[in-house]
Length: 176
Image (cartoon, one colour):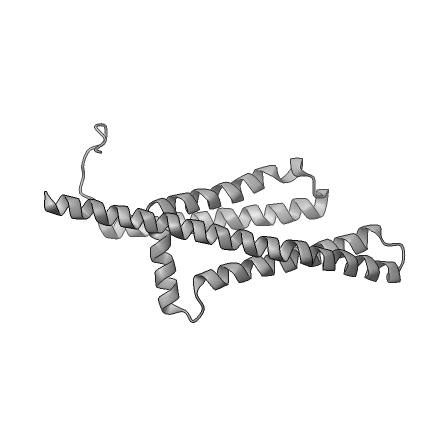
């Protein structure tokens, strides 16, 4: 649908691609700043939600927005297909492994936090670290692997449907 308030002007594709490159760089810069701010606030003022909610909203909001837009336009399927053709390991495996690594990192972090915060002696610190880490491994690794796997599967399925719909629309337009 055409916007009646916008003039249809010819645009230089080279300029648009350069602008998109700049926007992509700005997006990555904002994400890095948010992560550093999140880490800094956690290190200086503790892990209170009221201190870090804005950074979490920015990080989660932009990620969810990108996922919804890329799957709705069929871009996610194209990215996955291109990745799978150019790499040894498929994107689905990498997605599940990222969930496992994030779960392992979270478990180790929680183990260290428990040992540092609650232990009175070195032996107790080792015990708290091992206990918390092992239990966290058993909880977070399977959960995050499944969550990432289902998110990937759902995004891929939605993106494939968008591509199929676009192809059907093109076929109908050609028949007319």
